[in-house]
Length: 93
Image (cartoon, rainbow, N blue to C red; front, top):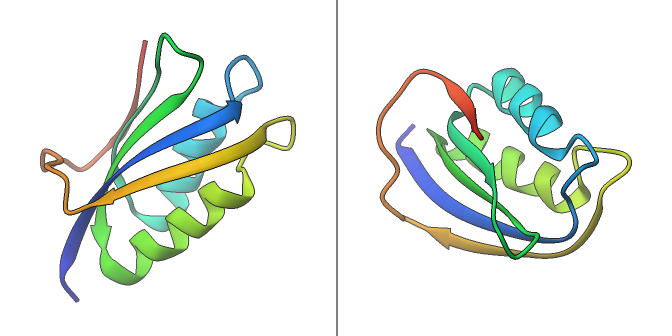
């Protein structure tokens, strides 16, 4: 399988509800590397890198909302975005 990348911007009620922590846990389970961080406008940005099938599973789970308290409004997906290679998935503070 080929490694693919994606940059996701998630809008809605996604800050202060454990979204970044549950996203990190999901990434760990699906062997996705990258980062997740809160943006000043209240959205969350996710940079993800994984085998194509795992990346698709990850994106679908993000659309459903990994945190039960989150309320996803929209997920903007930019496939093929530059995401640095790495072995971990980190929360950026």
